Length: 62
Image (cartoon, rainbow, N blue to C red; front, side, top):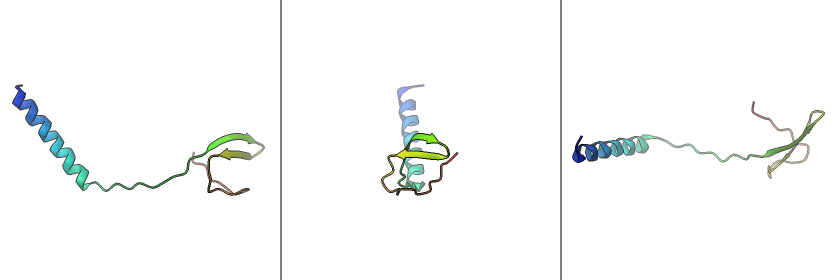
């Protein structure tokens, strides 16, 4: 492969990436992430969640 073949390949690749990036809809959602500091007798202590209140029920993903 010559230098012009590589240049053409690179240009075609970036053109394809640009096309797909324009068509893609990015859906970003903010998410709070905390840290479990302890677990005892069904009680979990969590830190790092500023919008969670005292004795509030939290759902943990599995």
